[in-house]
Image 1 (tube, rainbow, N blue to C red):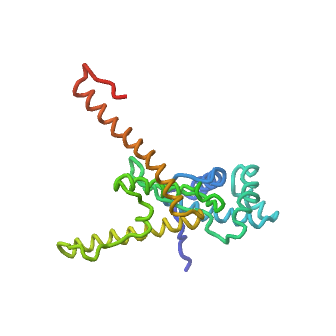
Image 2: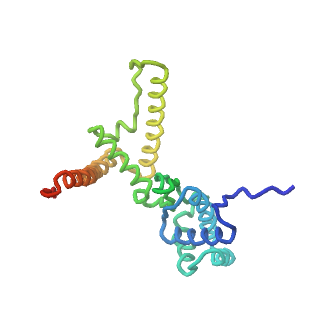
Image 3: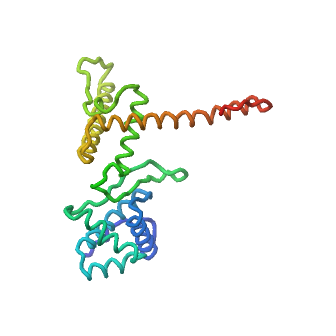
Length: 237
C-alpha cells in the first residue's frame, strides 16, 4: 500500500506551496539569507541544497532544471553555476544553516534565519555575529572578560546544594555552558581566529550593546516622567 508524503504541507494546498517555496528559494539564492518560520526554513534548506548541487554539476541539463524551477533565471543561474559552485567546490552537502531567532509577535510562531554558508568569510555569517552578540551580553552582565571563561566552563565540586533539584538545575546549567563552549570553539576554528582576537571583537560589541540598553531604558523613563508631570516634562536627551 502506498504511504503518504512525509514532507511538510505548511498549511497550503500543493499549487500555492510550490509557488511560495519557488519564490523563497529564489530570494534566498539571490540575497544569501532569509528570515522566515522554522518549518519553511527547513523546507527551503532541502530545496536550496538541491539547486546548489545542480549548479555544481555545470551541465546544460542541470541549467535547464534550474531554469525550470526558479524564478529570475538570468540572475540566479550565474550565482549557482558560478559563485556558489566555486564556493562549495569541495563540499559535498550542507550548504545552508538554520538559526532560530525566537518567536514572532502576534501568533508566536517560531522564527529562524536561514543563510547560505560562506566558508571564505565565516565572520560575515549571521551565526558568528549572533555568537559575538551573545558573548557581549554575557560580558556586560558578568562584568568580566568572557571568552576564556566561556571556553572553559567549570562546576564547583565543593558547592553545597539544598536538595537534588538544586543540584540537577546546576548540572543542567553546566551542560548548557559546555554546549555553548563547543559553539565558541567551532567559531574560532572556522574563522582561524585566536581567543584574544575574538575577545577584542566582543569588547567592541559590548560597548555597542551597552549603548543599546541605555537607549531602551531611556524610553520607559521618558514615558514615566511625561505621564507623571505632563505640564513640565524635562528633556532627557
